[in-house]
Image (cartoon, rainbow, N blue to C red):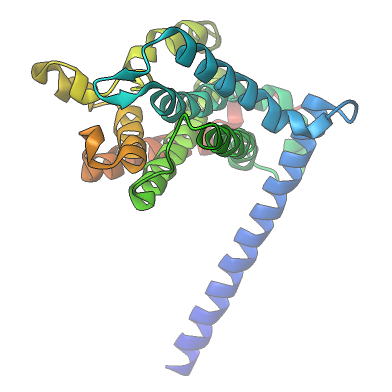
Length: 271
């Protein structure tokens, strides 16, 4: 029994050391990505936060100005913010995943750097920047009186968590596929625009005819944003989502993405 306990203790310590090493590598890759992408001049790394703020705040201001103040009994500004912030997270993770290994292939000479850590670093950078931008835009809208504080923080955080997993999974899938086939890179722009109606960013499931709601809820993004909006508006949102389905579909996408990322190394040209 003592030997078994000692063996399990050693295994747990080894796993802890492996995860600690992986997190340090991801942090280093994120810092490298910031310096490579934004440089050290002007505001430098603050563009990680500034770029999503310009997108989210700009769209929120524009829609607030040109659309009615309320739609289906819900105020327009929080509808836009709760939809466009997750949309920005997804689109940025998607765009930065294309040919990610081609841009960082030379780093694979280091044993600790793997395709998985490269994608986690890139997606993590976009997620952190978008969440910080969303917090600032939301605080600004609340301060100006265009938005109320969230009513249910639990379901809000759950929706954000699921959306983060969804974005990471999509980034792993498309980064691997774009390395295998150049057609994926060409198709990416068209895909990101054609999929906009199925993201749930600018509409809610309850606003659709009942016979179409089931189809919209097949999209993980729709379920995630519905949770976020219920967290913001409470029961007034009449949100539609299935937590069990969301867990299963995100788990499936993550496993597929991880499997593809682990097997893509043979297609990467290391220079």
